[in-house]
Length: 212
Image: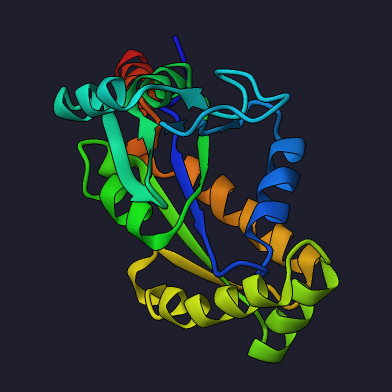
């Protein structure tokens, strides 16, 4: 039996603020943390495998999962459906393993409002400045100028949802931000209501008192 129930750790940020880098470092810091794999109706790209990059499903299969309550969150993006299957996340929780989600504020809201919402810890990552956000997007050299402009335009709306999160981290220094992230996770794991064996332990202490 797991010593505690696993958490649902939601990380959100505008593109370029460091969310994905922090997620990778977090999973290296604790290999028991599992990354939430999304389901999608888009076809696999060369080299992608079902259950590794995504769970690839047909549109009727995906819609049936939604209708049966098997998705924690879902949305349509550029004509394809994307979502988080509920089953693997619940299995992680039973195993006492935390699940990390690299999703936007809309997906985060849906998961927080779901039946698993009480086990959610949500963190929003902010850039130190808009100029720095723009610099990071350009320095990655992964996107065209038009794509970067689109990401920058979208970032204002994303940042406007910062107050909906449990914690907010300003990623002005990656190492310091990562330290704060792990501190949050360690503290959340130790919350009284996340230690299922605590009541039995205290009852044992009381029995020791009675035996004196």
